[in-house]
Image (tube, rainbow, N blue to C red; front, side, top):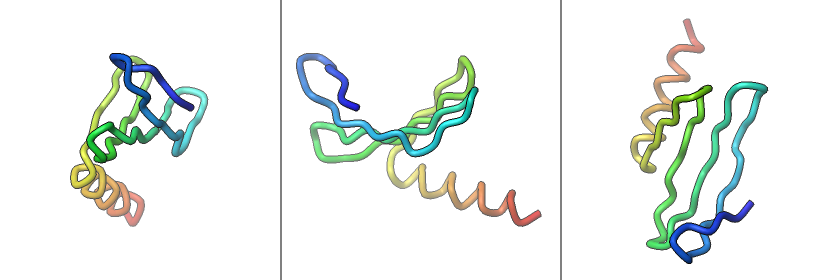
Amino acid sequence: MTQDVNDQDLETEVIAETESYLAWRADEPDGESTYHLELNNLTVHFFEEEWQEFLDLAGILLED
């Protein structure tokens, strides 16, 4: 999917989706990827390093 943001093309990719939640990645014009979690009416934005740490946390939660 492609979104138009301030006259710039922003490439996005859905990573995972359920009925209520969505995780997606955006390739920013500066070359950095950002990650986004849409949880009902809350959206959390992550830079690459933050996203990796979040995935580490999720992995720990799944172990318990």
